[in-house]
Structure formats: C-alpha cells, structure tokens
Amino acid sequence: MRTFLLTAAALVGFAANSLLTRGALGANRLDAASFTGIRLAAGALALALLVGLRARPRRERGTWAAAAALAGYAVAFTLAYRRVGASVGALVLFGSVQITMIGTGLVRGERPHRSDWAGVALAVAGLLVLTLPGATAPDGLGTALMVVAGAAWGVYSLLGRGSRDPMGATAGNFARATLAGVALVAASGASRHVTTSGVCLAATSGALASGVGYTLWYAALPALSAWRAGLVQLVVPVLTALGATWLLGETISRRLVAAALLVTSGVALTMQRRGR
Image 1 (cartoon, helix red, strand yellow):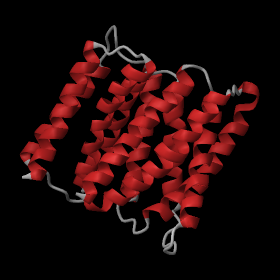
Image 2 (cartoon, one colour):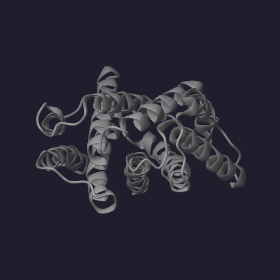
Image 3 (spheres, rainbow, N blue to C red):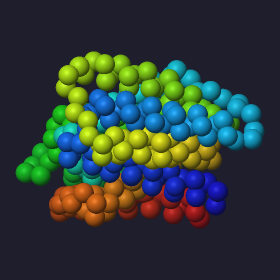
C-alpha cells in the first residue's frame, strides 16, 4: 500500500508539471529559459528547507550523473512544451520513458511475462496512433525534444532505484542541476520574457510538483522493477489530458483519445497481473 500511495502521488505531480509548464509557456507568461531556471532553483530551495527541518540525518547528497540527467530532462521538457500541447507532450514523454526503462530492464536480466509484452504492445500502438504523420500529428521538433526529455527522465529514474535517502538525494540532484538552469538563463540573453504569473507557475512546478513529487518517486522506486516503473508512468498522459481539457482549454482529438485508451489498457494489463 505504501508503494501504491507514493507512486500515485508522484504521478499526480508529474501530470501537474506538464500542466504548469504548458500554462506558463503556451500563454507566453514566461520564456523557456527563465521557466527552467526558476523551476530548478525553486525545487532546490524547497528541498534544502525540508532536509534542514527533518529530524534524521542526511544519508545521501545526490550525484552529478543524476543531476545531469535531471537537467537534460528539464531543459528538453521545457523547450518541447513551447511547440506541443500538454496532453500530446505527456504522452510522448512517458512513452519515451517506458522504452528507456524497459529496455534497460531487459538488458539487466528482467524477464516479463507474455501478458506484460501484450501490455507494452498496446501502449506502443497508442504512441504510434498519436505520432504517425497526419492532419493532427504533433509538431516534429517538439516531439523529438520530448523524446529526449523522456530518455533523460528514464535515466534519472533508473539511477534513483537504489536510493536510501530519497529526499537527500533529490535535494542534491536539484542543487547541482540548478547550475544548468542558471547557464541556460545566461545564454538566453535579451530574449527573456517574465510575468508575475509565469514566475508563480514555474516556482510551483519546481517546489511542489518537481521537488516534492520527485522525492516521492525516488521513495517508491526501490519497490518497483525497471519494467513496471517505466510502464506505470504512462498513466500520467491520461491525467494530463483530463487536466488540460479542464484547466487549459485544450481540445481532445479522436487521435489522442484512441492513443490514451490504448496506453491505459496496456498499463492496466501488466499491473493487473502484478496484483494477482
């Protein structure tokens, strides 16, 4: 039950990140570089405060490898959301995460059941329905950037599976990744566009949806195989699509509905077998 609750809370945070990012960038409330810098800095600050307030000593401080993966994800994720909607972006992102984590699990010796393969086949079919060329296919560059973001997030998740101090490790990773955010802001030069609402959205994304959400995810990961840790995240696009319709006024196309149904069915199939 603990793993389920941690995972569910983390997945809600992932969906919130997509909505907050698209809400800031899609409405031109904040430029991509500033959003990334503020998001990472807010996450680092919030986690530093939480680590300082807790009673038990810090056992981990993160790694440069995990921080690089986190920074790569954050930059590509933000740039992608300038070109694709929240719903489409989340589906491509976590499809890429699934491929990265499942592939790594297979290389490391994980051997899924036939029903697990069937679940993956359904999920991949959903991604193909969404991304194949057509009148409603998403932007190509935005899709490519989101694939890169998904691969980086997959690596970040894999690196966290052995964490013994999720909050301490996440705090250290965010502190290091903030350096990349500062460099990105500096490189953007005079192209920055900042509004109060945009800063609030970026700070909320960093402190709550990212900082706290990623800590919960690191806490859940040791109890999940790489296979299922990758697959379960495909629930996020469904949550994001619902939120985008309600909060951002995005249109849900038939292609997106079909893709979401296939992906959700695939996740349910493999998780049902785990329950048995």
